[in-house]
Length: 140
Image 1 (cartoon, helix red, strand yellow):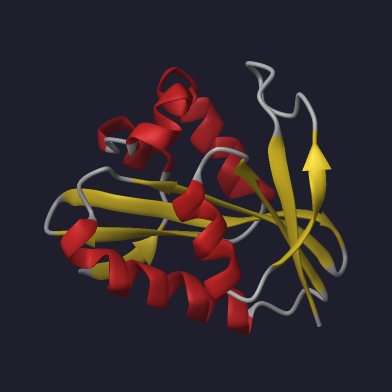
Image 2: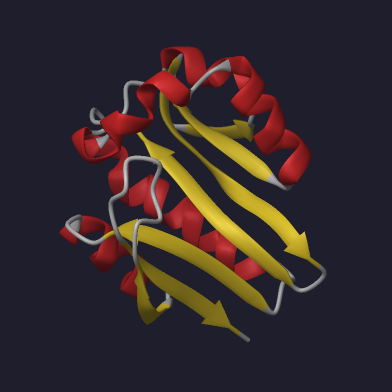
C-alpha cells in the first residue's frame, strides 16, 4: 500500500464500504474537484486499487472538517490505512478537527475514538437522506 495525493478521478473506481454506499451516486469528478479545492487530501492505493480517500475541508483558519471514503475491500490493509489517517490528523496544524459519523455505524465511532476524537453530540437530519450523525472533534 502507498499513499499518494488525491485526484478527483480516484473516485471513479472507489468501491465504497456498505456503510458509505449511499455516497456512491455523489462521487462524480466535480465532487472530487471540490474536495481538492477544499483542503488537503490523499489516497491509499494497493497497486491500482483505490483503498481509501481522505482529507479535510478548510472551514476557516484553525478549523477543518475531516472526511474519509473507504473501500469495502480494504480489510487486509486497514491497519495501514488507519496509521496513515492518524499521521495525517496528528500532523495537521488546525486547532480543531471535526468529523461526523452515521449514528448507526459502530466501526466509525470506534475509529473516531482511536484517532483521539471526542463525541460532541447528535446532529439530526444531517445527511442528504435525512439520517442523523454523531459529531466528533479533536481539539488541541
